[in-house]
Length: 219
Image 1 (cartoon, rainbow, N blue to C red):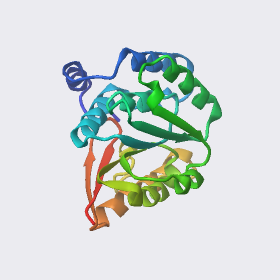
Image 2 (cartoon, helix red, strand yellow; image 1 turned 45 degrees about the vertical axis):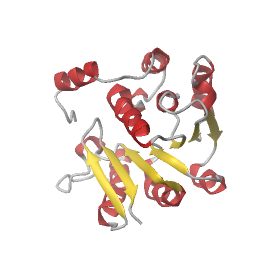
Image 3 (cartoon, rainbow, N blue to C red; image 1 turned 90 degrees about the horizontal axis):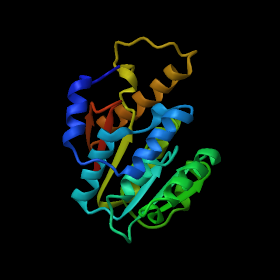
Image 4 (cartoon, rainbow, N blue to C red; image 1 turned 120 degrees about the vertical axis):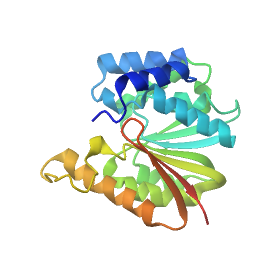
């Protein structure tokens, strides 16, 4: 489902500050060679995330879901030279591919890749994070949220990706729970409802690409 008219989106992209040519190379290679290239966040989303990072002066970022490294590098480009992006993914193959791209970038030294189960890795992390980007397996979205809220710095923001799921999250959409994608819809509906009902969170769900939920802790 195209949330915004394609020409409008392309116009917005053309007028926005965008990730570097290094990110473009990751996108081009991924779309041509890697299965599941639709998981890339794309230029519009990367531009918005960059704006958020600069707005809060973020220095330390946690990303859940590395894929081929586009989003991690796009975020690294918008934090200071002594900043850090810790990115977690269970896939060693795409993680190695991402590392290769980062090694070719002047911003790649800010990125630290951790390979393994995010639910096991998060509790081992120390310190606070100014920004958390959740874009991993949908089944564990709610657990990722619960684990990362306590890790936020006072100015911290959590962004959860793919929360509209091609419009399947709408209450009047009937799901076929024998289908993997529809089962994931249930997990995304759960995290959306949890955020909306939590009085200690300020959440804004944006219809950008496949949906972005922006979350701040109030208490």
